[in-house]
Structures are given as structure tokens and as C-alpha cells.
Length: 251
Image (cartoon, rainbow, N blue to C red; front, top):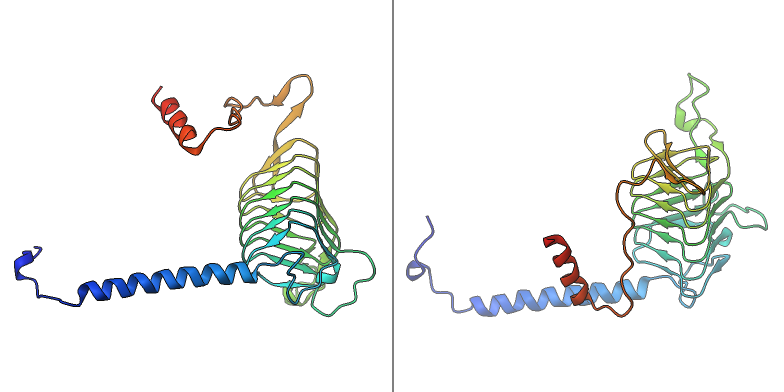
């Protein structure tokens, strides 16, 4: 049962302690914001990393995940790469991978927080491809041909990966070696993709299977279950948008 206020002990410095906590919290958040800004990687501020290319307007958020082989990594213009994203070219740091890039991100690619792109052989992600958090894209997979040798000690299988422009990869999607995704492909959250996926297809499941395709005459097959979203009118403020959403919810 809560105590009556009159019976609580008098704390003359409670207000001072509260202000100290507030000030400490403010200082921590301001300091962390400064660290995030200072630690971000851009074309103007690449830090210790020397990418084959990092385009204007691209940004790799701080803190970064594992990054190595950056002389063989190309990052296009206006790419947005979230915190804790791993980008690697080659099986380990310090290798000479030749004259051509191994990992290529087209312009305006988005990689969500915690994603991994592991390119031991060529991985190409087309422009304006968006990836949710914790997406895993790899050109290498473990092999287990020899039943007497630990799987981790067997030579892996490798195959190039191509993800077409304009695609969307949902949270936790996995793209395996040899996958070739067409243009504007949608990969459902948690799907595991290998092999060929045609343009304008939706894939889902483990292993991923095509669940919807686009036909020029009949449209989406099977048909979409919800109407297409209406674009936000130009010039609409967030407050107006909120009122509009509330009125549609009430109707």
C-alpha cells in the first residue's frame, strides 16, 4: 500500500539530484549524437577507409560493422547504409583481389541496420534497391561434401550474386550464392532466396518461392488484396496528414 506523502522522509536535495540526472542524460545524448556525426563515413570524410568509390551524398552510419577489402567496394551516390552494417570484399583482409570491384552498390541503395553483404566473389546490388534491417547477402556458402571433415574447414562454394534495380528486401531476408534477382523484385521478410527470380515478382518462404507476378495484360497475379496506396499530396504538412489518417480511420 503506498505511503501517505506526509509520512515520506524529507529530501532537501531531491530536486538537485533530479537536475543532475537530467543534465547527465542530456550530456550523454548530445555526446552520442556528436560521435554518430563524427564517426559517419562519407565521400568527404572516409576516415581510415579507402573505398574504390564512395559517391556524393552517400553515408555509412556509425557505428559501422566489419568493413574490409574496401579498395574493391564501390558505393554509389546517395546510398544510405545503416549502423552495424558489414561490408566485405574477399575472404579476409589483406588480399589482392585484382583490378575490378568485387562489391558494387548502385546509386541510392539503402541497407538497413545490422545487414551483411559478404562478397568473396562479385556481388552487385542495383540502384534504388532498399533492404530492411538484418538482411544477409552472400556470394559464399559452406560446403559439407566430406562427411569426415568439420563443415567449417571445408572449402566453401562461391557464385556471383546480382540484385536488380528497384528491388525491396524485407527484414531478415537471406540471399544465397548464385541468386539473380530481376528488376523491382520483392523479397518477403525472412525469405531465403537462391536461383533466378524474374522481374516484378514477389517471393516468400524458405526456400523462397514465387507467390505473385506481374502480367502486362492482367496486372498482378494473383490480384492484390488491398487497393494501391494514394500518394501524399504535394505540400501536405505532417499535421494535415495525421488528421487525414484519423478521419479515414473513423469512416
